[in-house]
Amino acid sequence: MTNPTIGRIVIYKLDQHDVNNVNGARKKYEEHCLASGIPPHESVFKGPMGNTVELGDEFPAMIVRCWGKENTSSVNLRVFLDGNDTFWAMSKIQNDDGIPGSYRFPQVNSGFTEAKAAPSNPVPVAAPAASHSRPNLSPSKARAAKPDTNVASGVTTSDAPKE
Image 1 (cartoon, one colour):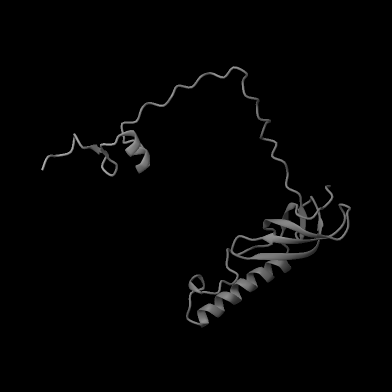
Image 2 (cartoon, rainbow, N blue to C red; image 1 turned 60 degrees about the vertical axis):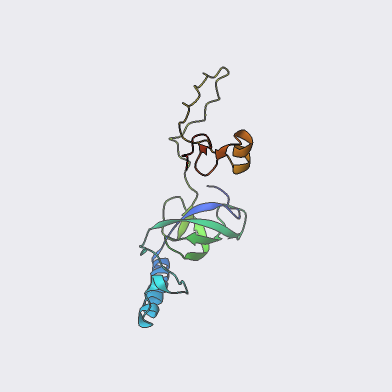
C-alpha cells in the first residue's frame, strides 16, 4: 500500500453514513426550494444538488490532511460527488479490498504502453491543398497586399459593378 500525502487523488467508497448525509442534504435543499415555490435548479442560492448516491459508490477524493506518514494512518478527504457539492470524509483509512468508508489509490491502467520516440527520418507530409476561399487578412494587411481590394467583400475595384 502507498503512504498518504496531502494533495494526492484517491478513490473513496461511500459507506451508509455517508450516503445518508449526502442524500439527506440534497433532499432537504430540494424540499426547501419547493416549499418556497422555486425549483431547485432555478434558485439563486445553489445548495447541494446531484445524482442520488448509494452504498458502495466510488468517487474521486483529494487527501487534505494526513494523521501520520504510514500507509495505516488515517486521512481527511474532500470527496468530489456527481453534483455541485462535495463531501468531507474524516479520519478514513486506506483499504485496497473495497470496504465502504475507506479509500484506495487508483490503479495504473496497464492497457497503455510507453510512447514511441519520433522517427529520426520522418516521412514528409504533403502540404494541404490550396483553399479557394478568401484569404484571412486583417484590414491593414489586406490594404498593404492589395490596395484596391474591398476587405469586407473581397472584391477588387476593377471587379466591382459599375454604377
